[in-house]
Length: 439
Image 1 (cartoon, rainbow, N blue to C red):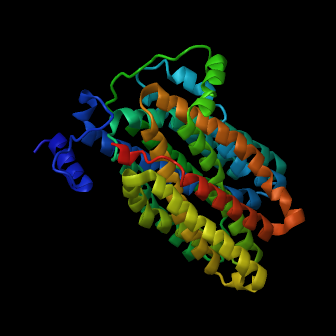
Image 2: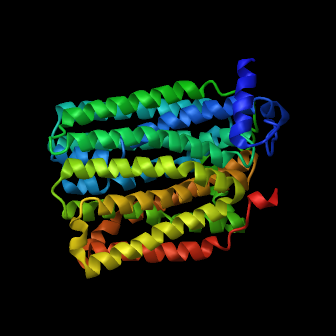
Image 3: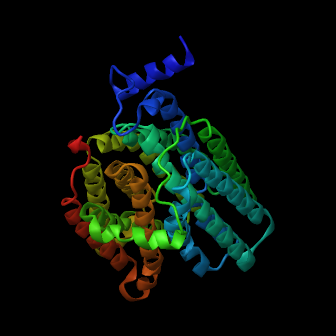
């Protein structure tokens, strides 16, 4: 049996179909190599998701910065800078990418630059302290985020050209679950470390490992068999970018999706406040860190494939169910914290809540990625991704100031506010057209 036929056989079993070449929305040449591309993409995504988890911007990097005595104001902008930095430039990036018939190289370049940046942060952990360390880390994260933007625009277009509809959600699901399995081991390690101090040098080694994972992902992705695609729509980047923003006015379905996606940011924005709430009621730093990492890994491992398959049936429902879980949790935490605040002194409670929150967020994340990829074909998909991500980047910049509300409405008030925003997002999401059921 040839290597190709092995790919096809495994692919058929995973997709539960007799013909491994059932293709929708991709051309005939790409259809013939779907199984091989499917597994290469899974491997690449597995290593990037693993790297993201090892260098977690919501848990690991803040913990490192705190251990380096970095000023709090720099730590508070960590996630907004990381997210918005990768999203804001995408309209300009997309204008360039549209000129390229083969776009996998852009993804690999972005992944390689992320590797260099995270390794550099590891070097900072070994050699710097205080404000200087904080500034160096933030600068590296800005560069890293810009590189992430390159990969983001290219990735959705490459998937759209190489993977059929109703298989794209599963792609994200399998890679997320495999990475989650490895991250579980990292969480268990932190539990064994227990009360022993985890030095900045230890974090440095961890970040070197994350960089190695990104390098593997970059090299693996180059093996994808991508055929030349549309190259029309190129031109002056700023002119093209401004023109493409008109999609928000002319395309009702896309406009509603962007608004809904912005409101669903409440799930990812809630996570750091859940972690802060747990830290305020616990002195067991390493145990708590281990439990949070373990919870995130278990959530990814146990739910990603399920969300992926649901997204291939209805990515709209995946987003709505995931957002409902996250929103209900927000209201629950608010009520418990208001009525019985000391309950969060129980070490395992908030990591358990974080586990469920992460499960819900996976539904939102995989659902909205699949929805956006399936919403359009060709260069229109690139435009959708770029416009959507740029708008979300702007929203994230403003959302980064949510923490400043703590002095007026408190931590509980912020969690309640984000939950209310989630409800509004769910109501709007119900009005989204079904994409998968139209095929």
